[in-house]
Image (cartoon, rainbow, N blue to C red; front, side, top):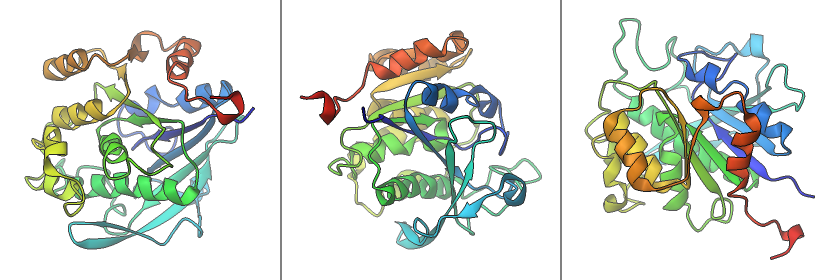
Length: 278
């Protein structure tokens, strides 16, 4: 039987970079899913904090050379790959890089703790870069797990600009919410830029417009099929959004010792494989 394919998206992962507790909370999740027969691929930014030599990253020439376009500019995308250490499933991690956005010594804040002014553009680059890289894979994921706010535009793009693309049209998308957030709004023109030079109608992205952590998560929830909670103290407004969405929700933080239950939650959304019949 053909394995179902799962795309795992994150801005951090043990042992490559441990910016917050997110990296630890999801460190075993890709292996858990692979152990249940899923073909898992992981994508994350290649921040300047990631040591290429130590982690044996090397460029994937056939995937590099994509131009990610937004705000009337082209940004070059380089893709590098490494194996997830100590994974018996030999899971591959693909690192998306751009010299303008990801060569700094800090991930989201400078040495003085100031949130980078261009974090919105860095996020948009990563999210659209994901879509273009997966298209270049020619690999249609049955499931997509988006971990945290940095990946929150992927459900939006998958259901709008890329909605008719056969690579994404059948994907079931899950958004994973964590305690970790940020206390800043992204730039005022965030939504304008996220619409990718008006390729997407503004009314479809209005939930994102305040560009706060809660707004980004709200927008992702609205375009996802299911919600995963990795949180003890969810923001009250965000909690209301989860409840109002009426979407199937899995509280992984309460059941982290039960990977089988989590796989069963994901598997309940499974598309019907051609080999299984219509």
